Image (tube, rainbow, N blue to C red):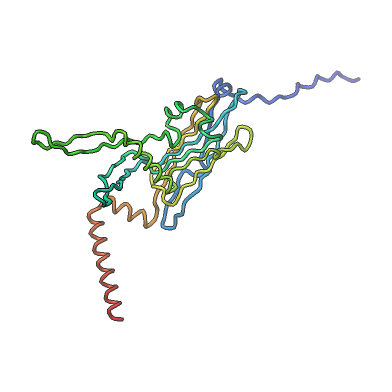
Length: 269
């Protein structure tokens, strides 16, 4: 006799991946670098780094990605040619102590199309909104027969000096703006390239990946990049900064020795 077989088990359904409420409903951006450490030696001719990431956007509102990379701050010393009595002379130097050694922006669209002027100014995004510390100028004056030092700002001339800093950096390839530098390679996946010239300063670089919707920032991802010297160049660099007086003396003796050897060689000929 045939016996009734038990009913088959229900079909197995894989459980849905666990997601937090914030991950499922929040608009956010995540990014990473292909190489977070660049080594500089005597043969360094520049480097190209790829930044990639993903946009999590559960809404139907389109989003824009803006990348900002800022290098270590460095002192910039400027002088301006002025004419006195038919002779061109250098003006007193103006020193900017907070100018980044490298600065670039890349975006999916031109920055004015992503957000308005005020929004970009508050975030400091774009060369036009780059925060550069205004220098203080030491002016020696005489009042009532007593010499005094008055500290004053550059006043209206600050904008002209600031433009000069940006113009020099752009000429050297250290300040860049690429309005089409961020591209989506797939739905929600994007990439951008960070090109460092051979003159890029060493130190820690900070990258900010902003996500904009309807002209407002909704998320940001922060990354760091290190550019450091290696090999013999690193040893010489460290020695020069730790023992500047000894380094200077050795350079003088080395130059004198090379000059003496060259004079003997050419004299014998």
